[in-house]
Image (cartoon, rainbow, N blue to C red):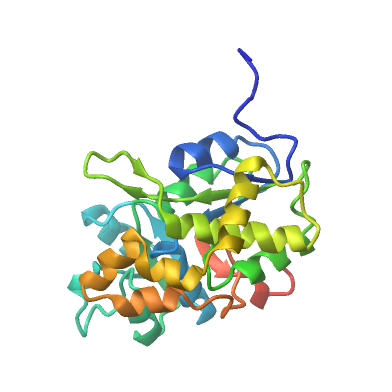
Length: 260
């Protein structure tokens, strides 16, 4: 198999690979739609914000460069969950975003979801943010664009988490989110699904996603840290009709714009 694109899943209309490196591999300048899935909590936060009409600018780092980036784009800057104050009420917390004042533009730093979006930017692949809240809406919208065929593939990229040594930790919540999109696309006639995407679909169908989200490692971490509401928001299966599509550096709800 030397020299072959064995990793590309090219015979499939719905494909799946993990993390930023997977995104770089799959989004290699060919036509298609990359669906980033970071359920706890980047893509859930993007969904909540775009559902309210906010444009979300993804940014990989939460540091002084993010402050400058937000100022340059005249956007509010999301802070860490524990850094929320009355003057800076926006964070990666979906529950906090739901209650925060509405802003037209928000910079949302995330080392996982934002990095994946950045990995696909400029490579000819369009980027959508999906979670358990909007998986069905994303699938329907993609099907309406003619996506989900070998010529116009859907590239599912569950973000995963990071161990302290920065290596990838595949995360159940992101596998479930990707599986929810894969299952909805399959029901709409997209495909064929690659074995990787089909395994995610089967896993989603076989489990109670709400119970799994509450009891998975990332869900336990957030609940133990006092952020059970974030897990509850992420577990609102198909509650949202928002389809956050990345254009001109920002995610906006394409479903709210019939011309998109």
